[in-house]
Image (tube, rainbow, N blue to C red; front, side, top):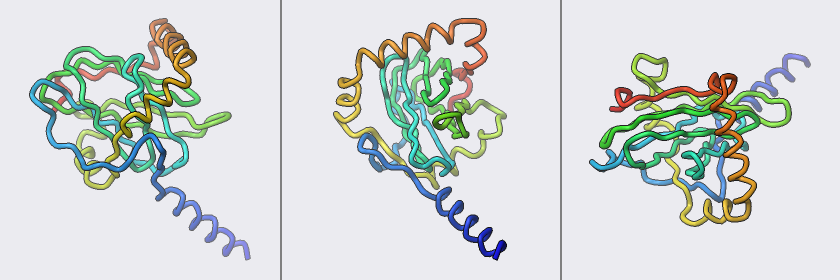
Length: 192
């Protein structure tokens, strides 16, 4: 009886881990090709199916650019130069990036158990890192999603003052000596 229960639990966990999250704000899309010569692409990839119903908010400083969903990725076209990407879950993580036009960069979002809701990791893919050789595989195997035009704007409009205040607080904290330990870096050389 115990072994049957264990098998059932394992099957349920396997099915849950294989699920990809969906939301009204992000929809499946055609995978993007190379970035235009005057822009950089930043791919936010979440290879795990764990916590499939939890979506992490991803910001380029104060602008909500998308949601990190299970078994999915999205490409964010942006101007070259310096950016501060912020991931919001029960915890907050950031990546300071210096991007070059015409190149693609990658950030892996992971999900972990939290106290009240899920926590996240936010790992820039740098040369020689554990994910460096995996991103092309992820692009093939994960769902390509993109923000639904206007939906993210509606979400922000409903919460604009609260969101702006929260992001300002996060940015201020990340600038402190204690907050700096939650900020990683992505440099021009990490682009492909």
